[in-house]
Amino acid sequence: MDSGSSVRVVESCLVTPSDDTPREGLWLSALDLVLANRGHTPLVHFYSTAGASSDVADDFFNVARLKESMARALVPFYPLAGRLGVDSGGRTEVNCNGEGALFVVARSDHTLEDFVDPTPSPELRRLFGPRVHPSSIVLAVQVTFLRCGGVVLGTAVHHAVVDGASTFQFLRTWASYCRDGESAAVDPPCHHRALLRTRSPRVIHPETIPMFCNELIMHEQEPSSSTGTTTSTTVVTRILTVSGDQLHALKRLCGGASTFCAVTALVWRCVCVARPGLHPDSTTRINFPVDIRRRLTPPLPDRYFGNGVVNVFATAAVKDVVSQTLASVAGRVKAAADRVDDELLRSAVDYFEETASAAKQGMRRRAEDRGNLPETELRMNSWFRIPVHDADFGWGQPRAMTRAEAVRGGWVYLLAASADGSARVLISLEAATHHKFQQAVADVCQVLATERPKL
Image (tube, rainbow, N blue to C red):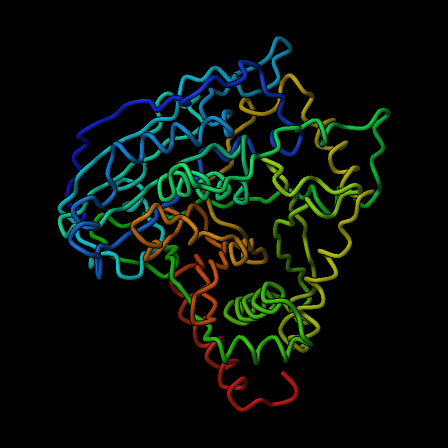
């Protein structure tokens, strides 16, 4: 990629809802506030005109059509047209004032061939991520037309307002209005965040803090060299592909575990192997989000729009992760997730609400460090079941989708399922660790190919 290439903004405006929407302050739950310091989540979708008819190519990502359909989608998803603010008590809320989402149109000399297998980077965000100003804007998009005729759609939605599932719920609705017009089938979102209000009195279970509330201590990240060179401690981001056959064999070796548990066990094992400096008796942790929508009693509505996740920790001795069977490692991951029930979740909400001190939490919290996780820590995120490829605006599914910037070493993403049944894992590690990690994965894949009964 030629980092000197520029992107030229040709239009910047606000898209407002096409019909009247509630004018109100939207209360944010404790699960929203605990994620407020994450800021905007930058995503990019890449679209190609390859194979399209001349009529489709000529009308490819028609800006007027995109704006009109977004305006319609912002009616049911009206909080995205609002602004972050505070209520009379100083608590962060969404001011649903209908001011609109930021909509940017740009052009670039880049082509899709420059991004055959895109990975997150500051450059990717600089090129295709919308500049969100003021920061109180909840939703911003940038449509960048490439020299080859392709398009990159960049989005940024504030994490205080929605999680990944809710973000893609909106994108799917916007795409449906754009693609299908009046015949679009749209499921309205549920904005009743009071379903996650704290109990009175609050009851904090003894297991809550060690399970949900461990701090992730970040280390300073070594800045990239101005010459583009990479040292052994520079964090680099790469994609690991596990073929459909390998994934099937891996899940079988993990005792029939889910894709997430099996891939998480593989990554956890191989990272520990790749870091020989870890003491065998030291404790290693892997942290991952769990969707709570179906785990509460009664469950949240399927279309609940907001943050419906909590982060849990699975822990083990390094020697156990390295030497035990992959089925055992996957079992640790599953056991951590299975412990998340209604009582623990309600206890977590009570705890987060209490520590938030309502008026002082949210946007006023200290921003998270932008460094790397310690070598004993990993963070695993999954988009495997999120329908990211449903973002078909009438010109075909995206050719690729990713975060626009990886912000921390030790963070891992299980990307959306591929059509061929493979799993793609995006992982950020130190350059020296990456080489050893790839070798460790290769060793496991060799065992998968021979279908040995024990690993």
